Image (cartoon, rainbow, N blue to C red; front, side, top):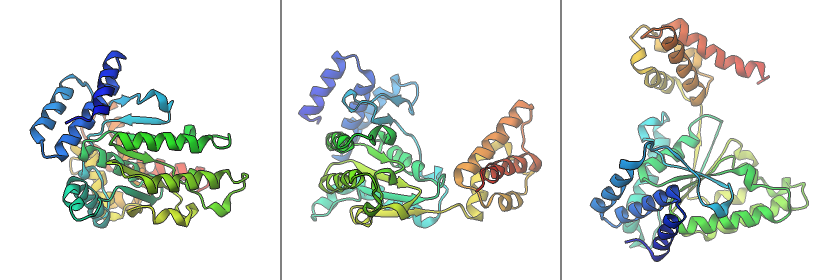
Length: 321
């Protein structure tokens, strides 16, 4: 059943008329009950919320004391939404399996993989992975707003980090530290009177001490900048690459859906898109679908999708990449 702290927060949320906070707490209680094997009760709780929620991915203004440090949403992302290689998908499945069966692991003195580092180029699926973890575990997805976390005032960032980890310890969720190199840079690179070193040391201390039921995900586009001491604090490190030819074909096919009437040579389109990331290909497909809709077409031909892919490639050429 709900803990004493959760009951107190539920009551407080009611009298504060904070419906979003109330919903999040109910989701946390439902997740906790499901882990105990009380599946029917957990489903009933979620069913009550679903009845009154108009959108499952609604943004929730979370927790006033964190003062904008965290952005929270409810995710319905599925593992099939991720178009990645078999190794990455297998490792994500292991994180989920260990989460669902962590009580079994605990009986043998073992803990589930809870601290995950994701590295790779922008747009390759790191943030979507965090959404999938939230969607499959039915936990809220809480993204740390890094530009609010890191400040120029000495010691303030470490204080905010402590607030975040205190919150993590009492509120099970998927916590995403995106652009993680902002606080995880190699300590020898510090040129700011030791402040970055202090921030990193604080994070190392907090993540090592964390024994919560939450899953902490850190994502970076620049793993080479990370301090080597960080890597051993994570239970798993997963590296993401640009999609290969087969993944590009699958991604384009998925995104175009019913607008693909077999008029496309997906192999030819994939060859053109090979240097793009997952998010760039998704954007090109979405732009093609929108243009088809606005022109009153129920299909997308090869010229249209190729034009949209070339437009995405030109973005980087114009930027000097």
